[in-house]
Length: 142
Image 1 (cartoon, one colour):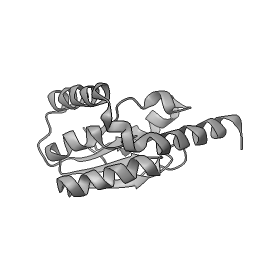
Image 2 (cartoon, rainbow, N blue to C red):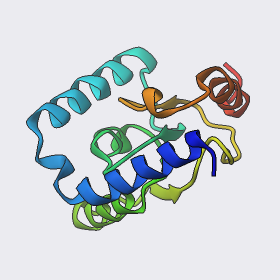
Image 3 (cartoon, rainbow, N blue to C red):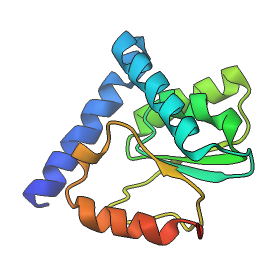
Image 4 (tube, rainbow, N blue to C red):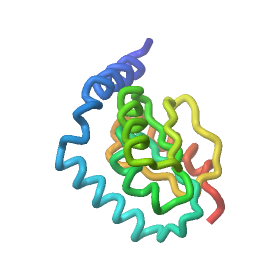
């Protein structure tokens, strides 16, 4: 395992450890609320979009946007974060979100996606230009 992989694995383990208390931060909830509002204002979803969230974590942003689109593929590398998201989806009876554990540096879900969104994630990606290029390939036309 190289240095980049070791740091990535340590980061995932950290997120697995802190997942259960992640949503307790008013700052994180506030940022997610502001980002969701900005996304809705920018793309004006019609409710027919197939969306993908890169680095969904516990679904703070996912939960706020799920009712605005037809479906969300919520992708994260931390099983602990996704476990919290799955519980929230059940509790809130949100049925149009599919959680997916994946390392987007190695594998990218098939598109097309209408919007691809994320918040507070890009600093965790070792090769941002390459990841963005792969994401652009998954966007639907227009």
